[in-house]
Image (cartoon, rainbow, N blue to C red; front, side, top):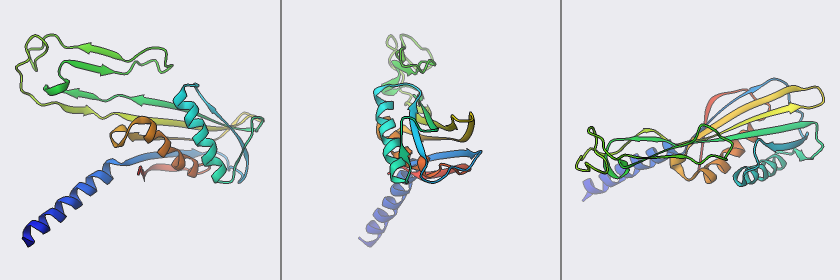
Length: 199
């Protein structure tokens, strides 16, 4: 009984460690000029999709919590752009008949590409579905936010940074909102490939 209990605890810790490992984002940033505390900032998304408008509000809230003020006529402009990269799969299993990929045009006007696998001698398709090869991920899905802060009074860039995280820890909207505090905390700093938790 003790051995079973010990084994259960070990398996629980391993699963917990794997979950923690997956639930991390990465942030990098470069500071060109110091950002004065309490500065007024205007937040501008590169496109006004519903998701980005929601992120704009999240950026504004996080900036206010850090002591910055939000003004439409502010000299400092924080611009952000988002990128949702769909992963790729290989092998058979449940995903062998349909392949999905994002369109390279990130304007939001073109739908993702969908390919139906009719016949494939290597792994099977709709017309030869008897292959038993299991599906495995080749490239994991991820979400990325790129941020810049520019001073419109002189055209100088003060700071730029980016953050990415695997979408496997949640959907892209949940994940992206959890990435924003790390980006705002990093304003004015130079950061090299630091990880942060996505809880």
